[in-house]
Image (cartoon, rainbow, N blue to C red; front, top):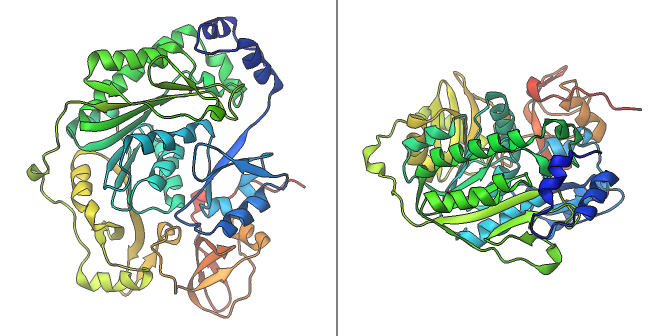
Length: 460
C-alpha cells in the first residue's frame, strides 16, 4: 500500500501522530472485523455467545468503548450467515462505535429525545443510536442519495425498531423544522483517509483539492441543518478523515459562527484514543484496534424551540374494522398507533404520532415505523418488516430451519422442509425470524423480498 506523499506530509503535525508506526500498520494490511449485537432481538448472554461462537471460530473479544460491540479474530462470510439476515447483529467499524460514549456523556438517555442522524447510510450509527435511546424517543435517519437511502431503509428494517423514520432529503430541507431536534449527529461525507487500510482503492481518490472541497461541503451541511437543533440540543460531528481541514478546523469554524459549547468526553488510558487541544477525539489505527476516525460534541447555547401548535395532524388512523385484522398479528397493540397509508398499515409508538405528522408535511419519508402489511378484504397480508420486528405476535406459526434450509429460503428458493401446518408462518433460524412463507397443501410459497435475496453461491 503506497500512500501519497502529500497525504503523509499532512499527517506529521497531527496531535500524537507516530508516522512510522502509522505507515507500518498500513503496510501490514491487517483487517479488523467488528460487529454489534442487536439488543432489540437478543437479550440473553447465552444467545450472544452462541452467535459469536458460530461466527468466530478463532475467537472474539470486546470492543472496550461500547456495550454490545465485539472484535472477530477473522472475517467470516456474513452473506452466508442466517443470523446476519435475521438482524441479530450489525457489522460496524469499531472506532465509530465510540459514538455511544459521546451520547451517554452528553444526553440523559432515559428521557424522550428526538434524534436526527443526518448522513445515515448505510445505517451503522443509526442502529447504534436506536439501541441507546429510550423506546419513547424518535430517531430520524436521513440519507440524501436515493440508492443509499434504500439500503438504509433495509438495514433499519432488519434492526426491527418501530421508533425510526427514514427520510431521503437534502440537509437544507431540515431548516423547515427550526428547533425540532434534541440531538443531531452529522457523520459528514469526507475525503475518507481514515479508511485507506480497509479500502485501499480509495487512496487514488485522495487529493489536497478534494480535502478542501469536502471541508466546504461539511460547512454547508452543518450550516443548512443546524437551525433544526433546539437550544440546549446536542450536535455530534464526525468524519473518517485525518485532515485538520475536515476535523479541528471544522470545530473552530463551528464555534466561530454558531453559539456552541464544546463538551468533553472522559477517556480510559488503555483505549489509546488521542484528545486534541479542544474536545475532539482522534483514532489512529496504530494506537487503537479500529480504523481512522474523528469525533467531537457540542451543546447549542441558543436557538429556537419548535412550535408544534402550528401543525395540523395529517395522519389517517386505521379504521376499527381494519384494526381487528391487524391486532392478532401483534404481540401487544397497547401504545401503538396504526396508520393507514395507500392500503397499507404502518405501526409506530403513539407518542410519535404528532412528530411523524410534522415530518410528513415537510420531508420525504421513505419509511415510518414498521409496515404491518397490506389490507385485503378479509385479512392483513403481513409484510417483511413485521416479520423482522419484535412487535410480531409470539403465537404466530413458526418453522425452524436448518442452516442449509435457511440459506435456500434466503435465496428465495423452496426451503424443502416438511411441516404439518398451513397458512402464514415465520421462517426462523436459531429462533430468530428471517421472513414469511405461506404453507399450502402441496408446496411452500416463499415471501422473502426478491430485492434482499442472496445472489452469491457458496464457494466449494
